[in-house]
Amino acid sequence: VFNSTELKDIEYVRSLYCNKLEFLRFDSSVGTFVGFTELGVKNAARLNKDQRLLAAAKAQRGKYCQPNVGNWYKVALTKSAPPTVRLRSTTPLSSHHPAMLVCSVYDFYPKQI
Figure 1 (tube, one colour):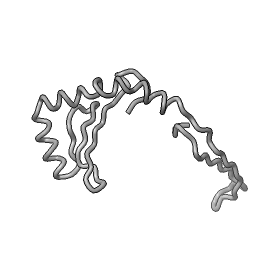
Figure 2: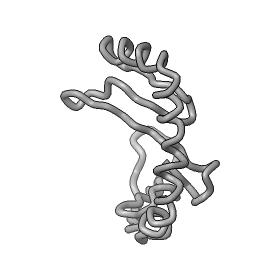
Figure 3: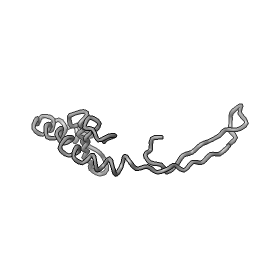
Figure 4: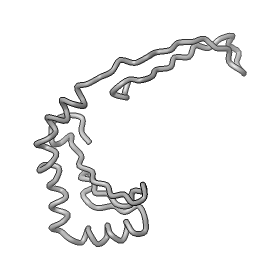
């Protein structure tokens, strides 16, 4: 997860899934493994005891993300797609106002407006 090419703005997240259900995650902002199911909680407790494994997981942000973020930034964050806007007038069901203006925006990237 990133919003610039600076290491301080990068978050390394590794999630493990089984049957489309996330059961374990390492998140560099938390610095530990977190379990989301009974099996995930047990594994997180076991993995968090291994200091070498934790150090290796924490190092992935700098080792894996930092060298690649420049490419990802060019591909993802510098791209945009103009929105499709639909403006319409409608009569509210229960209101003192005779009309209401509704603005809908579709098909744009990035999603923040």
